[in-house]
Length: 68
Image (cartoon, rainbow, N blue to C red; front, side):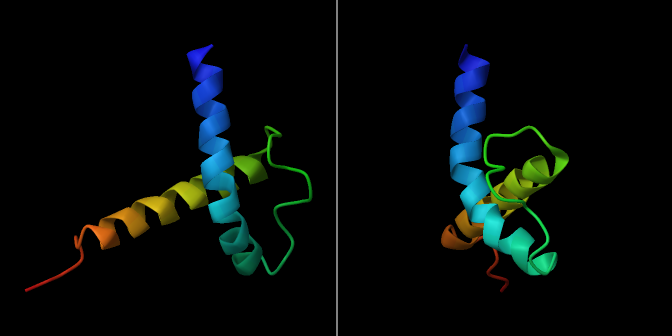
């Protein structure tokens, strides 16, 4: 039960973040409409892209990219 809850929260947060990035890189081809809670490779990649962007944004907010 906890696994399903974590999966839903992960997709609800990461998919909308990754959606514009994937649309930009695929020139509008992917992800398809209504693919938020489907278990297709394109929705998995979109969620993973959103997670990557989220991690980079958190690292930037914590000033992890400042080189002295």
